[in-house]
Each structure stands twice: as structure tokens, then as C-alpha cells.
Length: 159
Image (cartoon, rainbow, N blue to C red):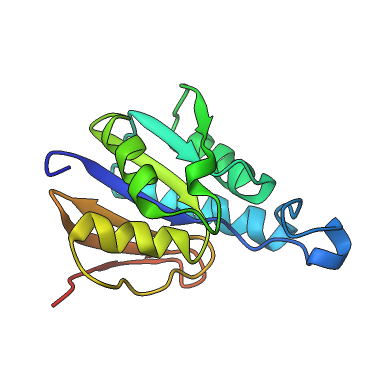
């Protein structure tokens, strides 16, 4: 994983469970769609050029992945993987990410996306992600975080 650049993303804000009928079926709210577009612009400004885009099969993650792909001019397939669902164990996801290319955008959920981040950097824990937040991990170390809610990118170092 050390030569790989991984961009871990939590999906954008989604409609409430009672509106969607179940948590699995929740889709992006208008605010979530806008946040995904803002995050896409922030990642484009960081010159993120993905080789692949992986996402959870849940609608809010697929929609976030599609909006990010459009912002990044990514024309390849968006691959949905059950190992990126909210309750999934990060080990399987880490193997999928390792096989996906040298620059991989991964869209998932809490708590599994921060668990994957912890596994990728070799730490017992990782700060939880806000919606429409990305943490870049390059050569096994976090390098920046981009947050749509703040419309900002910050250098990101874990002690």
C-alpha cells in the first residue's frame, strides 16, 4: 500500500431514514449533492487524478462517487463493493483498494471508512469523518484533509 495514493471519502449528507424508508436506501439531500460538488472541486484543486473509484453500494455513496468522478473528469467505471458498507470490516476493503490502482478514490460510511483509514496508516484509531470529507493517504501517511462544510483543505498529520 505504500506506493498507493488513497482518497478516503465519507458520502455527502443524505435524506432522513423516515423519508427514504430505510437507512440502506437513503440518497443524497440537495445539501449533500452540493457538498459532493464542493469536495470534488477541492480535490481537483489538489490535482487528484484517480485510476479508479470504489464505493459502497448504498445510494448515498454511489451518488457521492458519481459527483466526485464528474468533478475529477474520471471516465472509468465506478465500482461498488459490499466491503465498503457501514458495518464492513476494513481488512477486505483494504485488499480491494490495494488491487484497484495507484490512485484510488474510496467512498464509504462511518464507522467503516475511518476504520479503513486506521488500518491503512497502521494506527489503532482514526478521527471520524464528517459528511463530504476526504482524507488523502499517500505512501501510508495522511497528507491532507478536504472538507466541503468548510470549503477548505488542510495539511493533515497524525502524531
